[in-house]
Image 1: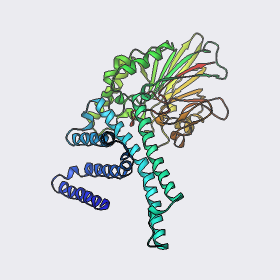
Image 2: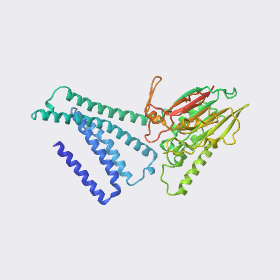
Image 3: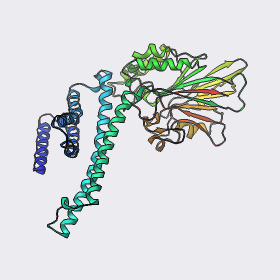
Image 4: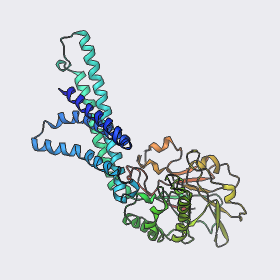
Length: 441
């Protein structure tokens, strides 16, 4: 009966597929995506249902509703997407639809994988038993084989629940749980006039993921309370379009520093992740970006520098366009152009969005760059950090993914900011949004 119901269910989906293919072919891909989620959910339900049957009928009903409710919400949202583009949704709904969908898929796949492994073990045991004795049934066996299967299934269900809980908490709380990372960096031959200089760095705002000004106002207050001499922003102001930043102009303009706020561009700022109607629309987006920085009073450095006079000493702030070792991202940062016609300075500080630039170019650069300020990695927005141990999937992509690093000669430093915003999944688990506070000594 169980397999008969499954065949009927799959037959209905196939029938719907051919009907949609015939009358509304543009809906085929969304229907296939939904069907995969539905089949996986039904497969998981077969394991969950066995466990909730042990409870009272009212609790069974409640647990059944809770299990299927996320897929129902995703279904309604998916139908809405067929008629309205995601970009046209209110930011709150857009952000949490993406985050909720991602969380649901992860929480679904983890137990499904384990249940599938358990089923393979079960089918293998059935095959072995049937060869030895056709009269024996697997459910008559006692001991390790059955207990191992139950352990695997329970492990998968536990991991799915853990993923659902932690990722949900990461969206509701972790995304705006700001942390100030404090560092002192000892630069060789640092002039006395510059010693004690206070620098605040933020990176990767990704304003398209912020649905409210309230948490950003909180972050700005944290920044201003540090009384920085310099504030650096190292790129990715938006997700894909400059208009995402417009609602936050007044808030960002409140960030103050004694010698100014300086910025560089990140890969998301160039508008390459949006499909523009024509070149005119794309150019307007770019012009809007340049004008936005002027409006909020930040100095955007595009392969150029600024000299900061501090009594009898000079400090050079250098900013380059995005440069990445990964060819998928823009590679237009030009250090030679950035220091062209340079004045003599005792300290050189570089804003470069992608930390791979430090690995590939900055360390070997003729003019000594004392500290490079980067972002980009987000620390993957997921990981574990303590005084004894830290781990993130980001470390498998970027050897320098968060915090302070030195080159082998110990004369050049890199600070990789974990980002203050989020992209894709609108949350953070274990890797908190960062405000870097660095004092030169």
